[in-house]
Amino acid sequence: MKLLVIGGGGREHALAWQLARSPRVQTVYVAPGNGGTDRASQIQNVALTDTADLIAFARKEKIAFTVVGPEAPLAAGIVDAFQAEGLKIFGPSREAAQLESSKDYAKAFMVRHGIPTAAYETFTDPAAAHQYIDAQGAPIVIKADGLAAGKGVVVATTLEEAHNAVDDMLGGGFGEAGARVVIEECLEGEEASFIVMCDGSNVLPLATSQDHKRLLDGDNGPNTGGMGAYSPAPIISPALHNRIMREVIHPTMAGMARDGLPYSGFLYAGLMIGPGPDATRSLRVLEFNCRMGDPETQPIVMRIKSDFSKTLEMAIDGRLDEAEAEIEWDRRPALGVVIAAANYPGTPRTGDPITRLAPDTEECVTFHAGTQLEDDVLKTSGGRVLCVTALGDSLKRAQAAAYDAVARTRFDGLQYRRDIGWRALPQEPAADNKTGKP
Ligand code: AMP
Ligand code: GLY
Image (cartoon, rainbow, N blue to C red; front, side, top):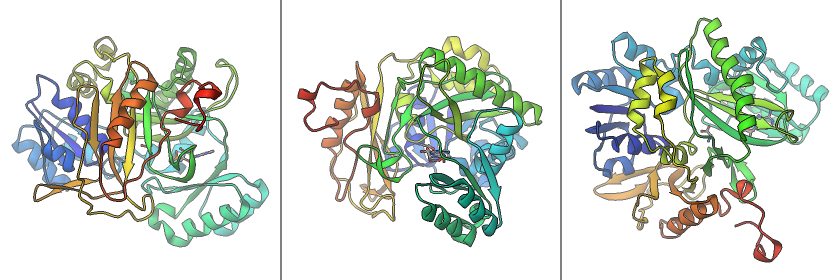
């Protein structure tokens, strides 16, 4: 069969790589793809982004089903358009994708259905927003309502930062996405990404994961799309897993159905987990995404041992209840390190030739994101360039293997964090840990 993956980042390279391993799959097309998918065997880039063109392509090539990677096409209604033409596609409808595309919609949804989340209010009037901030005090979190490519959230530690963020967003700095702002209580704890697949009524939880959102070691510096990730997330014990399904995932599915929008597709709950024993620690949803995470997808899909095309097909056909018995996970942890371009996350420098890459093996793969082939020369073309992802018998071994391959990667201006996974690794004895983190 032939499959189509929509998107061009590291997440889509990883999905296409996993799907291409299936003996049932002849070709995975990626639209538009990147330099990594361009070079892979059994994967082919398609230079299309327009929905009507993609529909025509899917028809012509007799694509068995399509998987959507990023949020923008979902929010634009690509699933509705494919389904209206009788084409199989995995993802939520435009209306259901509002769980991600409008923070205000997601917050009101959570309150309506009793799903735990930070206290909040929504504003369009700057004066009222400023007044609310003064009344609440800092720290406080300001979020642009609409999609802002991961840049629409300011965790303000001072009132001045909070007021500036409101002026920036409501002042037009984020376009339509910032016409409304959600201002919410600042939560403390540890974050985890809980991603499930849904078919409108059944749910299949994928392996757990955590990403590192900050640019610099020790989780410092500005927020980014994610500088690395690992799976599983040790913080998600079996007891906590059950609580998340019971308190977050099932109520979300039931709430969407009750609202007349039964949810199909990947659903990513970004969670903040407070301290304390698992039975009582606070568990709150920071955000919903209607897609898999990037870079969480890279370590997650490396751990899938069964044929993922079958799982996706079951999800599209509403048979996800059969998938739990069928999907098989590698028990080994996986860890991915993002290599970013100079100046990321500001305005990244692009066009640098990538002069060296570690060869891919069964246990270590370099997934591409911001790369493109120009006359057979691989060059950087975006902020997050690569995600080097490795499996290991322990998280520490996965980390060592990934960093070994990172050290063999070369392009001018590359930057990466040296400590991906640190929260999940057992504390080293002081004598072995003179330099702090790994
Ligand atoms: P979001 O896109 O809503 O997940 O926000 C991006 C990041 O901002 C999250 O991953 C958190 O690190 C941080 N964040 C968002 N909301 C809050 C909150 N209420 N309290 C503390 N940190 C938050
Ligand atoms: N890594 C966070 C995200 O994909 O939203």
